[in-house]
Length: 232
Image (cartoon, rainbow, N blue to C red; front, side, top):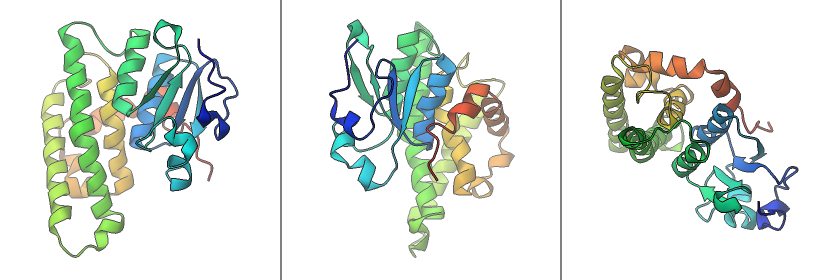
């Protein structure tokens, strides 16, 4: 174990229990992937609320951990070989936690089936849903040119249909519940926040709605969705 009390991030978000995993996050789809994973895996951790404002994510303290100024980020004082490890990018963190515990990521060829779907979310579902939300609900909605909005709505529909087809007859996206589900389902849940379910024909999909319901019914998911707890 390595002592993290001298880490610059500790000046702004002091660790009360520096011997456990430190999570720096906010309950967005990417953020809750990790808090849910920590809950599902039963790992001891201390969450720190990092707002999405520049005052937090562009602070020298946060940039000392993640130069890309995005949540979530994580420090494990008990990393490989007993040394402290710093991580950012939610997909990388999910893989790390699964390998640390030997859970939610199978061995052999099945491992790469799971990682394939994690990358599907990281490279497709998340970026496209996020851009769609910007152009439908946030500042982008005021742009007169309809093409950006149509581009992201159409691509989001396409990705949902890919997922829907692959979930047919299955409980989870891979053979068993895995980090692939932890990556994908929080972004499906975000469609409610973006107010785009009717626009995307979400309820007309054959498999995705029930899949999301199964995910949300898990006790660890219900807890992790609200970690770190918002201050407002």
